Length: 168
Image 1: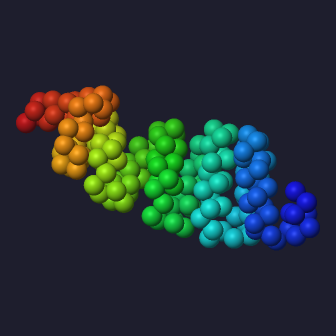
Image 2: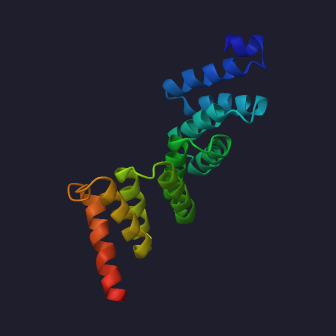
């Protein structure tokens, strides 16, 4: 706190204050510090990442979603930012936003069976069975036998297979 008072334009001081408050579970105070940091440098990906965490801690999903969108814009290859964006979108029932975030994750991790299966599960739940099956197939190709021990993903795979047979 003293460092922010001594130099109100010190980005590192505001990030440090916010991080301390975040670690203490003082999410509103952490968010306030990170918002101040964002006003100093709105392009710093870490600021938006930490702001997203603070808003998540307060269960303020709409503000968290906005912070994660800025984090992904500032750093498009940040897998954690895309994952948090998808989770916040899920909390707000914004299926299209969650789906787009998971598609970006699939692009970033093209051979990651877990990520592909996770996206396939989300697509299956949204009724996009053809796309879900394609991702489950990619997950199996990346790691043969992956789906069997993963109950939720395997159930979504089976659900999409049945839905596709039914619609054929």
